[in-house]
Image (cartoon, rainbow, N blue to C red):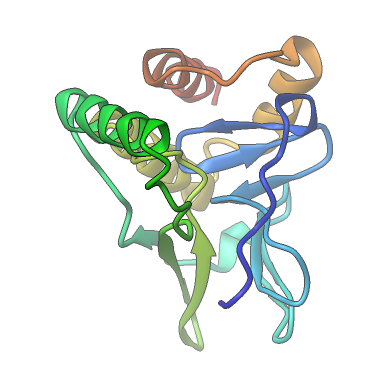
Length: 178
């Protein structure tokens, strides 16, 4: 993927775990401009948009995995934020491309991989990644649906970027609601 996705203001959606949630869509990672591929999660199943569109139902999948996820502990994330702040203050900071992750859809006809952009500013917390993966597992097992995510957005519409502890709490809420 060559293009860097635009930064989205909080009123357009929010990063929660490995997802970008808005009123009408749930993406794995950050939404990328066309023609770059996106992984959209719907009530019926995951859908790849872009040059090679595909879609599946949740019931036909053996799994959905997200790999190459940028994960760091809280001290590591703070150190990276501090280094970026100092570099910006010294006018030495150059924004980097978002980290690419890979979404693997395990379907009856094989495994299909799609690159997506991370929506984390620096990295995700290990707990945030674990909770996100549990939620994906619930989708593929039919015990939860991404609708819980868009309903949350409609009910709360956060006006600021959520901190990792807040994102973890929202993920736990979604897992409890199933």
